[in-house]
Picture 1 (spheres, rainbow, N blue to C red):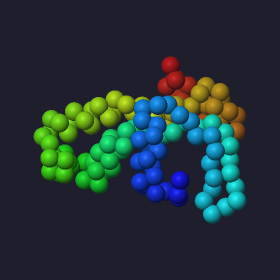
Picture 2 (cartoon, rainbow, N blue to C red):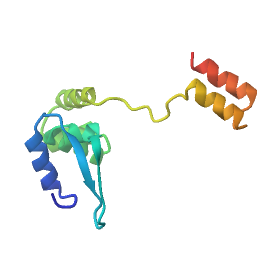
Picture 3 (tube, helix red, strand yellow):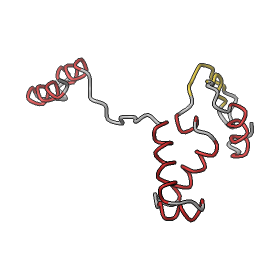
Length: 126
């Protein structure tokens, strides 16, 4: 695959069509470095090519369902149903997960939290 060619990404999506796969080798562009391991693709990359195009169009339209109706020539309920179907495939990722009990206590030991702040943080974990 070339470096970031959308047509090649679409070809890869078609080749793997709904089959689970992992990435085992990553080469840094312009460097003589390759990293090997096992990484799952992000959920957006696991969507079908058609759903990826739909999500990209939705973002480009700034979330305008009216514009999506015009671009795809479909009704409001059809756009909403497709967005709901795609959303059901994506797991919500909490970008600010609650700290563990051990993390709160470590922060208290390091003086990053007052005793009152630590108590509140621990109570929030219940």
